[in-house]
Image (cartoon, rainbow, N blue to C red):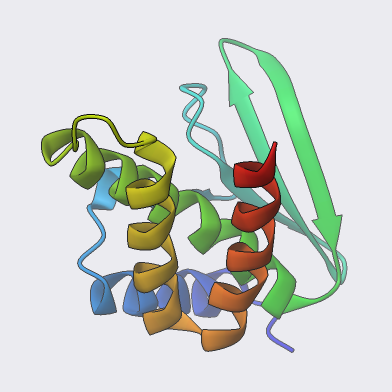
Length: 129
């Protein structure tokens, strides 16, 4: 398991490049821009995925599992990328989520096939509602 912020940051940046993720979707490490962009904190052997804006913390998820942290990071990045693509290519008379979810699953599968399966299950549940 990697507990060095520098190594984790490099790993995230390398994975982000494999999907051509824009830099502005990549979380910061060790500090928050206070813009709603997630940031990563490492305290001891625990990773924290934190979203803050204008001095308020809106969410915090914690794990000791690097793979789970990477899932959270790339779930967010790929959702933003998929939203941008879907919006440019929206199909009339189709639930926009169908295309958005497919694009996101395709993108995250480049990072990890298991992540894509997790997302697919979540997306199927959402579409049933």
